Image (tube, rainbow, N blue to C red; front, top):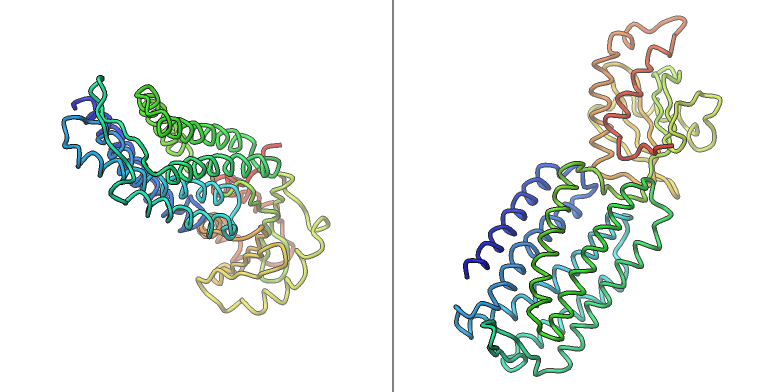
Length: 367
């Protein structure tokens, strides 16, 4: 009993720290949905499921209670791994959840939950090693549950491999691969335990899960922006004076500054029109939707300059980064901008590079 309590306390502590950290750094997760999902995964998998899973084997508790814990652990397991697959989608690429996730998984999960809560679906028995074990009376439930685990296992690997070449950051891709391996391994261990009910697989699950939880938390704490939508990119970052003069331009794909002779196509279309229309607006981040890109435009009325950023699509991290950049760029260059007249030396605004490196670090591709 003491060992079980210690494991539960460790998992709860890791999960609570993770929940608090995710909430405090919520702007680093790209979308509100992704933040909520990460918090819920810590709550459902790390606290609720893990506690129920451990307590369901403890013979110091009543059989009726432990059987209830076992059934509830199955339900929260289904919720948790479904949530895990959705989080991986958001980490790799923000998009509408595919039909297999939004329709099939909840439908199959609902069937599993319905069959699990039936009074005679699972039997409990105690073996000679002083642990409770469980046997599925309903063969359909056992088969569907195993197939559900296998489908999640297959999907997260397919999603990773299919998008691996599109990642902007190889290091983040490697870390996501490690995490995918870890989660797929605990899915495998849990499935094996369901089938053979061997205490070895149960203890292996305890150890592997806690080691993985510590690694995940350490990785996120060390670099909270590590998993911001790995296939999303920023293309160009341009700073214009209200007169239309290019003050600074940075190309994220090439990882270097550019000049006006290299800017062409959709980047320059309508710049003067945009400046004319937004010159009187204050404290408003504006979005211009194009077929395959989002153009984020922000104008500083006080210092009379504008920022134009192009990306696959906006997210909360990019919005926050633009706002922080403008705040600091205005502090550094406010006097220069207000006194601009005659011949302008745009090299004076080269300090923008340092601010880009500071606030847009996850999107800077190492050459």
